[in-house]
Length: 231
Ligand code: ARG
Figure 1 (cartoon, rainbow, N blue to C red):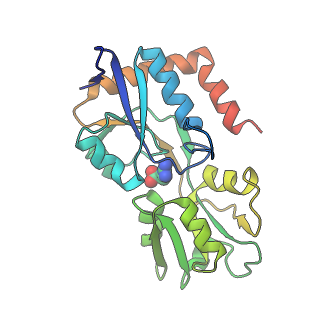
Figure 2: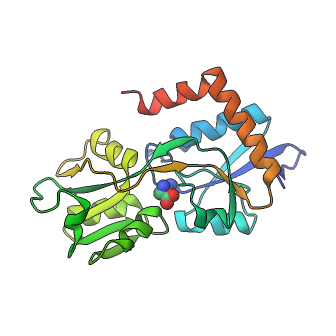
């Protein structure tokens, strides 16, 4: 059920949680959403001959919005996993990620995930970070709306660590010139991102996969990758 616009034009109605630089974010004073996922889905839409319209929806509201058919595509740094596969159909993987943690720069006691025992950890609600940290024994988990909220909570001393996707942690620290916090090298998981469509929308998933493959073959995917992860 790919959407049609007023003029009969095909539309990808995309849901994304615009809080996840460098995948999806909005700079102050800029109307357009930016990031790797945004460039990728626009390139996919162009390849398919579909118009792309993006709605900003909180991460834990994305799958419900897809199920309610408010949107027909999700791209949001979303990890492919079995639990979500019960509810959505994923494209082929398009980005390799995983979880790391961020602590205050002067932190002496937390060097590895096992050191989180007895500590307070902030995670974004509805994410794989929330799921994984809940599995660790003796950790007090604080689920907040956005990664930015998590980092703020860390800086203000409300939690001892933030667990979140590695490229987002690295970007937060390196590119946005953050001070007072550091990312630790240990990886808790390895995860693949996928584009999600409704469970019964296999045809749309196939079209997206075909477009993704074309972008990989043509070098366009590599250009977008280099733009966001180049140096
Ligand atoms: N990869 C993680 C997950 O799928 C986090 C994704 C969060 N995305 C976002 N746009 N905030 O659960």
